[in-house]
Image 1 (cartoon, rainbow, N blue to C red):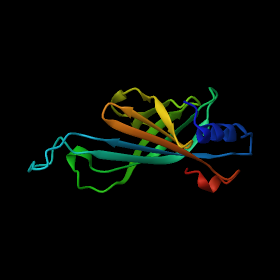
Image 2: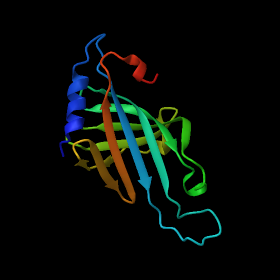
Image 3: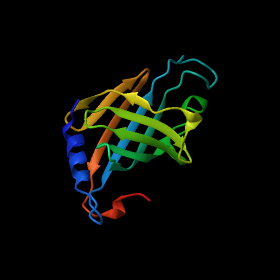
Length: 157
């Protein structure tokens, strides 16, 4: 599924050469819905959780955008009242392909959590700007922003 904003971001990043950088920022969201009993007295299984991740992506030699995005998440099933907050040293590795396919992988200290492989999601383009897909009981959404040329202050270190 071709998506206008993703195509434009890839074309934007392709212009990067040497000192001339055409940076792209990616936004990732995952909402995992879990069946819940409203009167369960204890915290446990059955609580939704959300991830939000943001960071720079670059064009790789294969022609798609890749990057490790800083993860923010709530407490999930173990603590559903915990607000969304930054998770130091935890990222979401993303690959965004021109056809709209997306892969994502949670990492700690740049290593896949549990040695798991990336999860592949086939997406649909929404409004020409967002890729949205489903993986089991999760909804995944990816968006991108073409940043100002050579404005390296927009790129997290």
